[in-house]
Image 1 (tube, rainbow, N blue to C red):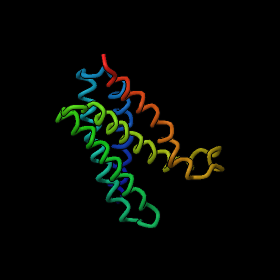
Image 2 (cartoon, helix red, strand yellow):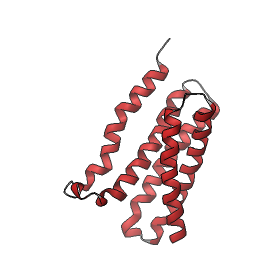
Image 3 (cartoon, rainbow, N blue to C red):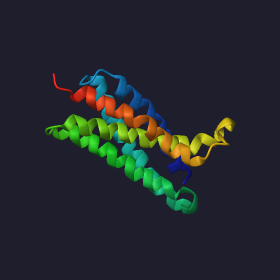
Length: 150
């Protein structure tokens, strides 16, 4: 179990860093595409290990299975949209990739919030929803930026 946990955490941290590179790189560039591919495969690995880890301590980690499913679903949606490039693909690509990133950030925050003493008095539910509350308007703005009529 320890090997799975260490590889899960390590890949998750790298995915969060690579995700920032993909988000900030010039769109359609080699850096954006390459880091996006690496991000997708890292998320896939994190979600696979995240789906296995709860079975070692179900009562404590059952939520990890759910967040792994959601995160992978979004990453796959974004990855597939870019591969197929059907009409309106950019919306699904942005929503999927950023949605998976929000799920990854949510898991990271929920797992690590106890490390910050000043956050310990806040209800735990806040940390489950805060990343989404912050990200949804930003995702909407990004979709609008990339889909507005020229």
